[in-house]
Image (tube, rainbow, N blue to C red; front, side, top):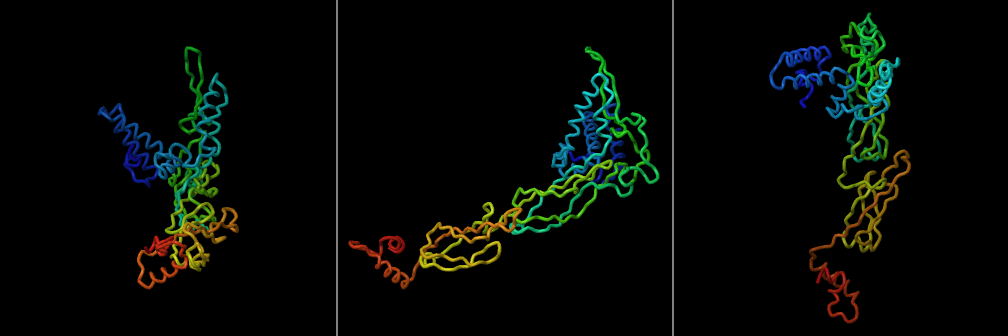
Length: 373
């Protein structure tokens, strides 16, 4: 489906009144009773769906952030409030069965409504994930309208009792079937179950009581996080309606890879390359760690594939930054491919000390024979 804003022919920052005018114009243009062109009815339905989504601040905010994928529920992070539609369906059906007087769905909708949770995907560096950092981010969410203080009405006015449902928030419809007469109870279409309507809506929010705003936040990222870590920032989701609590903001982290270092749980792993003399005789070298350059002792006779450890130079344990993992170094030994005459002579002299009785070509035996024969 095309972008909802394009369908209505409005910009993404269009106010509620602009949305309504554009919808009414297009609805008249493509109404099946007026327009008999092929495809007009489909266009009429698409325009209606677009307006239904964008005219509600909650669904509009989800659509702006996630597209059509966000309309399935809860702004990316489902919570108990998202089950309201499911619960209302059953409550409406069973309360209407046999003409019961109490409509659960209508009553639920009249109370405060919690705001949606929001999701923010944030990428941080390898170093920031290890040691933690405070990040400034910018989000778009719904806040209570500052002009009408969330009432949805202009100053000096207020909500009035809905004439359609007489303030009950629900309407009833009797249906005759071969099995008898049933009464169906549903939320009032005029007041959407609230029992009240705004006769003189606030110009700033179009009577919704909510406004979409951009906000800067400082997110504290603890040491030891990794890709997939989820952080919860309380009350920074969308504001609730009719005095309901705000939702939460959930920050999902993605950690960039490092050129030389890789993470293995709370340990860090990397490779070091030694020449054959360092491996044979031992040495002390400088190596890169997350704490900067550190000295690493190479024991004499270190073999290729040996893993050497720097204790406490790994990743802090999430929730306990005092406890850190280790840095593990896998050893590679680089063997020379070319030798000058002096180097070759010295190595051949060394090889002669390891001559085994009965060998005709001692310099071709063992390690040195394979290298220099």
